[in-house]
Image (tube, rainbow over all chains, first blue to last red; front, side, top):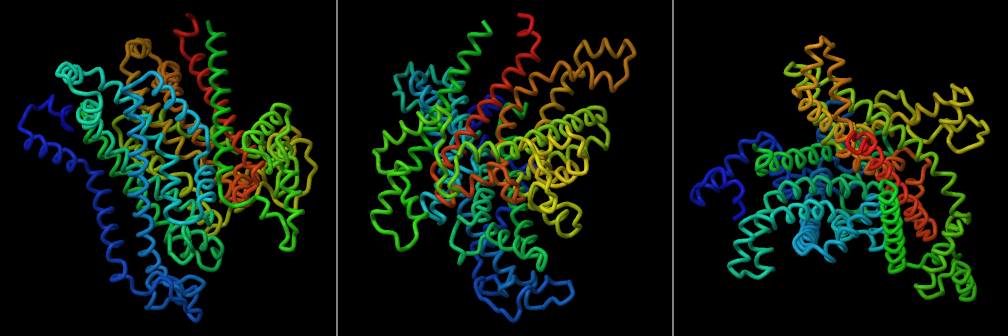
Length: 299
Length: 335
């Protein structure tokens, strides 16, 4: 059902259709580039305790602010150097990927879930439901997102859970807007009229017929949202509100590096590079998926 | 016709702003943690605490608190900041000009860079220059303002220190200003050395805010321009022997500027939201930076006032864009 829009152009058995979609997705260079990087990052995050050369929290004040390999005064023990407390930057980067990816996947999924649900209801039922959801979206858009996320985390208390909740509470509008418009368009389609004539219930039509047709659009949006979630987590860590300072995060490292930027620029620069690469990868993957799965853009 | 449409839009805007006020008020009141706890000394007696609570109206029921706050705003009284012990409206009036100067300058730069890139890309169709420009735009689009700002801090603040890292102007310069629009005022009064110093402080925050917006403007404008370039009116102009630059920047641009503005409009409001973290990174004394401080200090009256100001800015920008789109749309103009 999810490929119904594509199937119009190429009537084939479901299997052939699935393979065609997969091929279209993999033919997109952005998907291959972004996807491989994210897969690599997932592998790094999962095997962090095994591949990290040091304990990310282990302090060694005797070997503080050592520069990365290749710079004068570097130590062979610390490939990416150490911070002012003598902690290994590489190990902290590796462990930091865990928070970044956890927040990316969980927060983006929750935002998508909430936004899709409200978007579907508003788009299909219209009338009062649509008015209420649309007004909510309008009000939400009028908040500066960074200030609102800081406010939510300040209210709920620091921690990964609060960060995830803040992102879901703020970014559901991104999904609701798109899904609402798409549902309105789909609700006019022949297959919905057919389903209605066959006597399908409204909820059945909405979740079994319309939702699968909206889903391809969502996949790209969720991936883009993951990139946004990684940034929001870094921003909250940078402001000092994300997780406790015991857990290494890229944003926390950047904030710490900002304080000692003149003595040890690498403590600032390396997590920034990790953040940049991750956001770019999610962005390319999401953009590529959207291109490959959106029948309008294919034409 | 137009007047009733405008009135309806204003009514909607007021309703949205009221919604923003309700949401922020409820959000802050359900928050655990006592704002009073932040401001008392450890030895304060229960009477002292109760007195403070009464002074800020925190002992009243939620509904009355909201009513008092709203009635105050309508009289122009936004309450008193708990952490700074000053009138909220005065604080806002002091800090808002800094944010406005930053946001407006960033918008202008984004329009110039994005528009310029779109026109240059259209002129260089199917040449190497276009591909290079597309690549650069793609990168500008993928990287958010937060990362741009930090990269600039590293590159132009530390590795090759040519720009000041923080603040609005050199603290050693003390010149009396009449308004809080320092840049505008120093330009109008021909104090160019001071204006230069202020601009130097603004370059990095402006670029961080402007680059992502410029990329979006460029993308949308370029695709609209390339569609327009094959239209009859451009062909006729070409037959008349007009130059290629005039075809793109004159004929085609004039016809696509309205739709492009409509498509990029919401992005301008994202730029306003972006000022919060950018001001923080560069210790720029605007309302965004003050907002983060206010949240950390649980300064409820100040947070409420700030969120309302941001909401009002957002709504005004949306309104202005709608009016501009209508002004650029020949069908609406003559109809």
